[in-house]
Image (cartoon, rainbow over all chains, first blue to last red):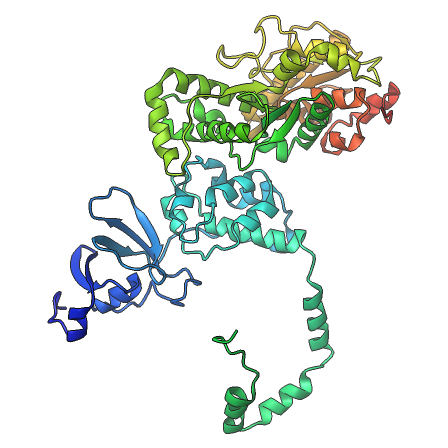
Length: 241
Length: 302
């Protein structure tokens, strides 16, 4: 793959920045996200790319900047390139995920320590919180786990997209994001009231309220289905809303 | 007066009765314990290696966050109050040593500055027992007593951490008086006994409970010999070992007639007629209510 290509007219008018992808220099438009810049440079992403909207956590990126000793992290689809970035992708994070039967547990600290005893090794260095692209106070929820404050740990960790960057920076080798999954399951199962609307809807489904409607849909030919889907459906106009 | 209060992990899990009784009592005595926000584990035994500064980030972070908390509490002195004697020891030792070694503090602060947090070395660490002795005063405790603990003969158990080492001790290591003085001001009798700081066996409970048992049996037999009918403690681990292992010793046929283990704050709450629920007696392995009922001390309100 050529590292420099002749510039198009559009490129000449666009402000370009120099970035380094796994050690090789590329010039890319400064308006691109890291993910688009990697593709612009000619790479095809087969891992480390998912929803491209900041929700799936697949595109964890680790980088440094020229002349700056610090390690930075980001989601590649959510972060614009900057001059002098040294980039690499983290397509996968090795981290043990405990197996448990959520119906047989207690929502207390010792449950978490049984499945993730390494939680007790937390040094309170806060490296995890500093790398979190979701700006979650990761260390604080790890500490809430130690205190048995399941509700707080669930609330603080709620925005986690499971990119795994916390786990690779942790000197205590805790897989924080898997711990957070256990915590939120415990909270949902044991601390929260079942939502009334959900129970009502499940009853409706079980009572067959929607069966007629589904039967009708299933019997329609494709063109009629398409028409229903694209023209008859109630749309919320995002621009007006 | 309000005190910035650092709970420690055990106060939220195994020792809820210690925390809740202490907070209730502190409000009665105008020395309210106000929990600091977003605290982390004190670091416990791992902080004891002086050459591994990574291990000391945790206690220094506690001190710096407490310093911030103190500024939010009106009229609070520059100090953080603990209940667990292990947390107290850890925080006191590290606080003293980073003050003595500014280079160490600077290195630890490199880790904290990323979080817009550095420790200025401006805090003191106090155990709640020290607050009761030095700020509240025994006579003011006695004034709040509505249900004197008549018939209680208390052996005050200090364990290792309250009296050692020099940097962390809260009282004289050979002749401590603070727990006895509190018990006396509650209307109880106290016993003079030599095992007040015999180690309970500590973390050996995890994999060598035989070691803990051999310690507990010595401590309990000595307490009984001096006529004590209850022990008071200030450490969740001592409490667990003394409480749970007496039950185990009874099962093993080694020692009968277990005596109840109280946190000193639980007895204060009873003597002050505060609501029962703060004591969480349901978490104890030896039911403390049996003795309290016998002595007619249960269920009296202020």
